[in-house]
Image (cartoon, rainbow, N blue to C red; front, side):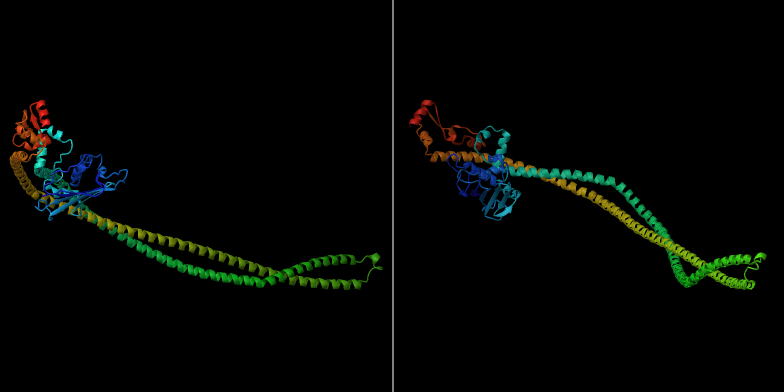
Length: 557
């Protein structure tokens, strides 16, 4: 497994799409200062899941996006893709080549892809974890890191060596197993607390269930009693309603009779008014006759006075007999006056009789009219009383209907309340039974959990032992590899060295004071060769001389 290509687009100084082909045997990327060598290393770390902006030599993650120059506008996203040769199958995926891509947008959004398929950061980390190049499982020694490595504590050096050797994978697995064990222990504690709490609640819940059952029985009795009472009230209300309806019917019949009587009285009133209208001319004639008779009476009284006066004047006076009127003439006038008086008296009697009859007729008509008026008033009062009674009965009927509706609604509400109480009782009983079953299951499951816990502890101990064995074997192999690598490197340098150091070493006999190369003069303990070689770098090829004169002579050569 090795890196085949690395493609950068919009990442830091790589504005255009740039692809680096890393064929087998390529071990370095060279270039002048500022050409982007460090950016290539940052891109490799970034595409494999690096989340720290400071590790990428930036203040925030958006700083990795090309920010633009005087001649080119800034870009909106950065994209890096790395292709890994998986022909040996070290990556757990069924592809000979695996391409991992990461894209970051300027708004903060980020995307990952594996072979063109959208993926999560966790998917990328899990894919690389088994190969030893996953997150925190690889070491990138950047600029200014050599001093930090040389000055590192033994623990830090151990961490660097473990990361480079791939031991971190096993340590991560161990930490994961420990976290699982801690989580399992916490779950066991919570389960124990839950079991204790459920056991503590069993008795109160049992009492509550018993109370609920008794409450259901009591509520059922109360419901039956209320229903019986309401049935009695309903029967009484129905009887009262029937009585009210009967009274209403009787009142309506009575009202019909009163209306018929009132209609008859009104007809009689009309007839009386018609009779009065018919008798009105007679009354008027009687009044006229009375007035005429009154005039005649006045005239008669006047004539009587005149006759008396004349009779007084007709008495004989001796001294006037010879010169007075004729006695026969006076007698004749007296007879005439007596006849007129008799006629007038008879007419007066006739007029008085007619006046009496007219007054009697008028008085009878007035009495009949007053009687009819009283009868009409009484009929109207009776009709008003009947209407008032009918309205009162109607109000009573409506009130009875309202009470009946209210009682019906109350019955429905009580029935619903009883049903709800029964449902609550059934629910409480079901919960109680479920808790009993749950507690029984927890009691049975505790044994299984204990066995699983013991088994997990055993697996952890086995894993720890395996890790220690792997570390021991790894240390041995690492020391052997370092020694072999150093010897191989020394042999290679001795066989193919063509630079000035090789010339100086080969001319050590001609130039006095040349002691040899620095690498050949150092004695390195087994297992430390790789660290010393990394710390010395190119200095290991330096030539050691005795003094300044020897160095000057070497430079002249």
